[in-house]
Image (cartoon, rainbow, N blue to C red; front, side):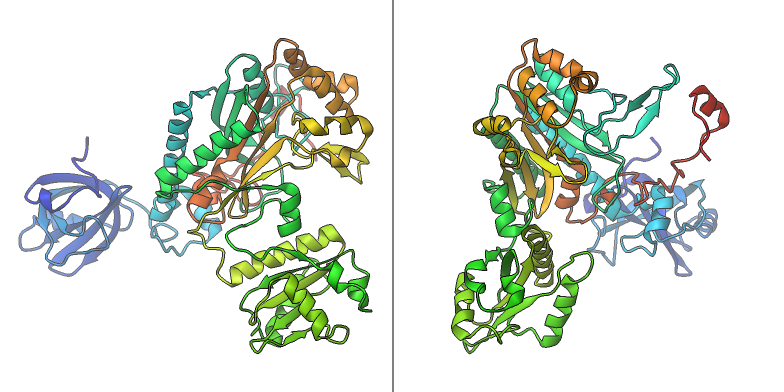
Length: 583
């Protein structure tokens, strides 16, 4: 090898050794008679020293030609530093250089290769291979590596088998948009890239592979956000001969294993909450439970006071921002404007101050006396110094708007700490949701999700909105990191579900006939889950975006700015694929 040690390896115990290091020049400091070079690789930084009085003049001359990001090889003796640097692991030693070779010069990079860089998102995405040299980005990928490693260790220890499933599959109409791939050998026909390996992992259960997993790349052609990419990675799992409880125990175990081995955090038993309670108490199916501020519904104590804003509302609901009674009128007006933004969409914000002296002051005092305000405050168990914030309107919209306000208040009050982790199972989702525009029912999860056994009769009576899914999501810090369900494994029920979703018998057979046929050859009861691996990594890394936990991510337009993709293809390829140019 070209080196004997890495740039993060040497310590005082290595003094007097002759070593050879390779790496990138972080910085050169020429002090006249002495030249210092910080040499960097992915393991750390080691300081090199050259002294005009004792070093070869040719070596000194070559050192003075160096610039940032030159790739060099340096040979020399490990010596103890006089002025130690406690900010780096190798800060007690330096290398007294006797030989130096430039392995490759480098152009001046377009941004600083440092933790605090001067490069914006676009320029760093274009030169991602340079961005990956920065400690903070490299550490994110090292975290991702460790999480993948520990996931495999845990699942291997539970007798799961890793099986690769196809990447070129069949397009299906349910779910997000597919990325499609034209077939040259079958003109006019297309593959799709998988949104998940769902049907294949169910077929593996039919095949007798009773515990399957895969850390798998998936694809969705959908609008992007900070926590979405057109290609993403899942921890995809399926088990046979299990019920919901078995899945919850097994994969709560995985999450607790990851927290312990990656973060050295002992995660307590994960609490559970029904979808109905999550919506009622937090206005969200992925509540952030790092802090309180649970919703309190006020219809019973706030209506009938001749206040038309309250009396005409379907729902009056609020939160208690503890300790915020001292908010000024200016702060409250700013908060009101915040909820009226189009992104939130509330018409206004009502409030009650519980003053330190025990008096109550509201934005609707004209209609409510002190006793009526006290009734509302009692619903919140409010104390002097608290501020009650109230939103009214159509029930679903009001809950969503108050959820936005709750999260904003949690952030403003410093209650959403990135180094604190609260996990939650959310259970019993609706099986179906009705699309008004399409005038039909859609699967809330996917069409292979089983109803709760006790709700199956509702499929016959037509009370479809009341049917609960045998489904579950794991939420960490207000982010859904995983979801799954007990699957349908009997052909008659699967056919019934396809019918409810508007499939004709012919359409169901064309799209999923292979799966229903498989169910007739002894399909076992089975269930599964998939975790968003990129999201998990970003949460463990304390970041909002998944982008820096992916080696080569796309931007918000789905473009790879480094290789300039997607791009056009030449006419010869178009002709081979029988694709006409669209102008």
